[in-house]
Length: 390
Image (cartoon, rainbow, N blue to C red; front, top):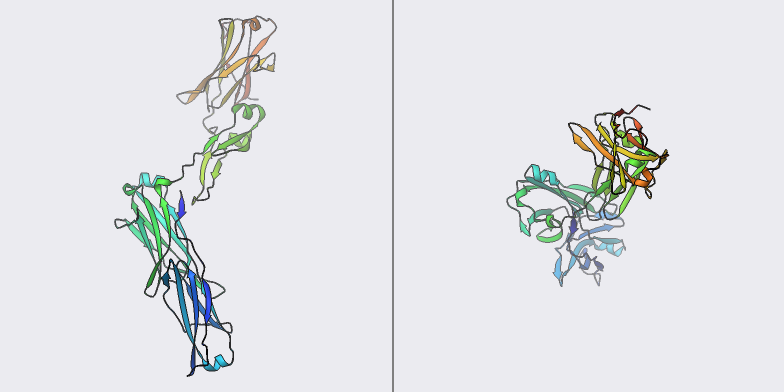
């Protein structure tokens, strides 16, 4: 979800006091406060006398001149207090609301044929406001419904009251994608101003492609630990141990983007919680072809599908520089799986009478089992062997 603030640049006001030049006539004197060159036009004046807040003052609507605004406030004070050199203070609060737009999930738009949006306006003043929803810069009239909350109030130390509100909108999914805008308007007497707007653009949403690679079966079965690799823009590794992997502990890769309302996350969960079936292992007859010999280890009727097939040469792990070995992906059949592991060696190596080649099968239910095949035994031997618990 991409949320962009599209309000105009905010400029703070410059404030000047306005005081009478002479003593004047009558019992009352008018004091003024002038705020200039600010934008947008939302502005609140407050007055106090010797630190005590006053309420009997006048604030005039802001006046626009050259893309900036000017505001004036006046208060009448007694000539007696003025002559006694009492202290009056004028304060100006120029506040923009913080706006956020929250959109419903893609799943809701697919399954319920509708989409929901929420616009939050926080910390604005004065209290009067209006929120409009626009679709492609035109006010929405065919909405399913819209709910507006009552205004909440927060008091700050300087006496300024700030308010917050929200608007909830639901529209038909067939009206999307579109550029949806939440537009906030503040009100002050007869003056109305565009304070800020936030745009949620379905055409420009972020596509975050999160890919999680699980640990290798070799790491899990042989070393009892490995790592998950989460790849978005850069790969991130997370260590995982065998016990957590076997238990199917859930791990999440979470991606937070600066302009996204909420983070993206993807789940990794191993499939080891399926029905447990012990594998049967068969050593197939060797096959000679073009000065090469291929040994095949057939593993069948196991579940879950995570199985690791390795090879030993004279009880040592086969060297990948000397031998070529591979394992097929497990094939499912009526709830159980089967796979083949193959070791390729030269005919010269195979003719070495002293070498012993072993197929080693690792699976969750039995740890490991070994099925040996040498060049001295009956090549037709393919009696199945059931793995035994350790």
